[in-house]
Image (cartoon, rainbow, N blue to C red):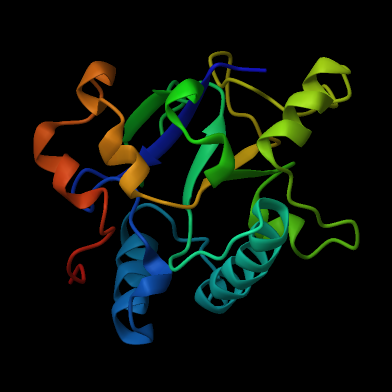
Length: 193
């Protein structure tokens, strides 16, 4: 199992923003900006799908981790995904897996927005995903790094408490400018207009 996770982000927005915590109007402003700049393929139904996905993830994570969460998760890739250029998220935060609380993270085999729509939709705990790696049952189609190019299939990690990031020594990563650390705990502080 990879020993790092990667969060891609836009430095103008900050690390681990929470789009779903915004009002519909503010969230749509953020999405409209993305459509105009770097993500023209974002569908008009993105926000409703994202919110439905987060409800599903929250329900599943509550079952798997046996506790409820007040906020939606922060999203990471399992492995090092800092190599392929993504103009909508040009900065990368790499964290050692060991800095994340095993009882506060979940995993999906693929992008959670796609996973939740499948009949075999499932969220895994840290112990369950570790066991799959130990048994060599992770299918080879799941990329664990983008060092050699874009990976369409990946394992998504959901961190359920942003305050855990503040407890990690992010300065050790040298990938996060200090001015962005303030955005971690609260996600998007104000609408982007």
